[in-house]
Every structure is written in C-alpha cells, then in structure tokens.
Length: 80
Image (cartoon, rainbow, N blue to C red; front, top):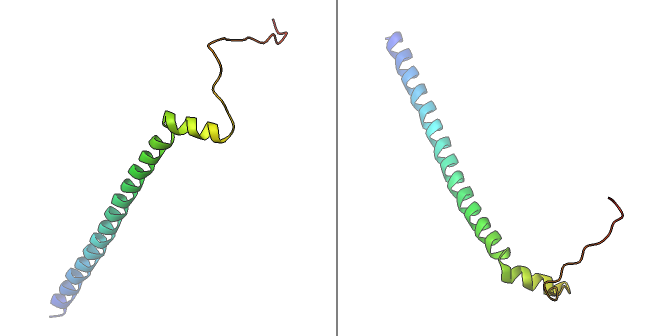
C-alpha cells in the first residue's frame, strides 16, 4: 500500500510539473506572437517614415531646400 501511495504521489508530481511547463510554454508563445506583431507594426512605421515624401517633408520642416541643378562642386582641401 505504501509503495502504491508513493507511486501515485510521483505520478501526480509529474503531472503537475508537466502542467506547469505547458502553462509556461503557452505564456511564452503568446508573448512571442505579441512581439512579432509589434515588430511588424514597427517595421511598417519605419517604412512609412523613411519614404521619399516623408523625408522631403521633414527636410522642409527643418528649413532645408533641394539643391539647385545638377552641378557638382569639388572643394580643394589641399591634400594631394
């Protein structure tokens, strides 16, 4: 009878451990799904913010203007 009680207690202990592990895995899977969704949202925001129209608008707000003409000027820095 004592051996049976010990065996039963062992089985119950293993079941409790498995249940706890399952709960932890489920929680981590939910957290992973939330983080993946957040990552997608941030990636979308980054793409929108770095689009040409957004960059141009931000530059205008800072007082920057487009360069006039395709002329290129090189500075002589004295290093040869």
